[in-house]
Image (cartoon, rainbow over all chains, first blue to last red; front, side, top):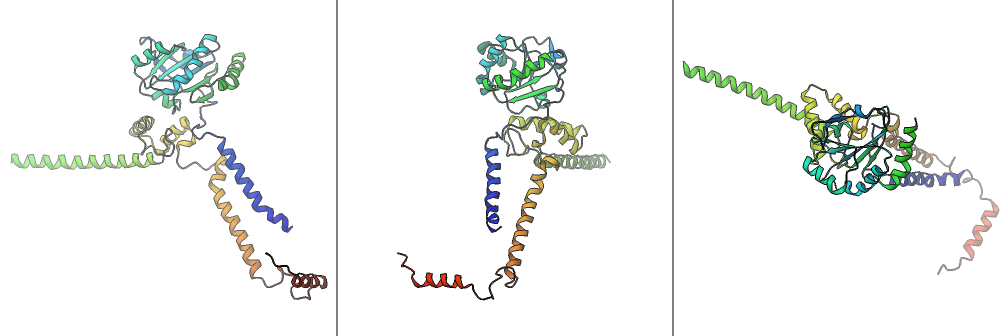
Length: 177
Length: 157
């Protein structure tokens, strides 16, 4: 009985250690999005390369697609860009680019320089649509299913690991359904 | 006569202007208070009011627009929570997943107080529970062992 009681502080200590260890493995910059599982916020925006045309969430109905938020001023967008270009070449899933708070000329020049993986890029110059999508750290990538429900959100640059382990399997699953 | 008219006009203009300024000041104060309860998601330990990040500016503009369109503070908060999650609120809502956060410290305090009270009670209570054999004769074998220990204690160094 006495020895059991002596173990109590140890048990409390271990619980605290467990909490702190779990905390270490998490990235506090990744805020879980309330959008996952909810309908994608609707938009209809002017296209970057053809300002006469628009593209919106309604146009993507019936397809599984990715929304990639990018900007020419965004440094980590360069990191993920080659992956997006590869993804576009593999033609697995259409990617719509949301050119977030950027200048059109700079955005176009950036794509000309680094390659354009997007089916279409749309212009969100004042970041309003970004706010609707809960964007806070460019680049961000959303997976949207055929019915227009957001299924996944990647905060920060895409990685090979995230693509292969999460995004691509999810996309294939959603394309089947 | 003309002077009086001008004066009257001036006074009226002053009254209107001050009333407008006060309304504006009250509105600004409300926005300020609201922005202090909202977190900037880019620089996470700053409020929207304090942050100079681009997104914070956009969100402040958004909050102002919503407030101007007659939305209440609660509606504005709901708007942001729907987009960014509870994390935008500096004061997290009380719900099942935040019970530990809200009540955990009080539970710990109560637990500590309970243990403390138990210790105090034990200390205060005479003999009884603490040392049941204290007023009885010590057991003979214990006496013998104590004596043996006392007799040949080797110098510790």
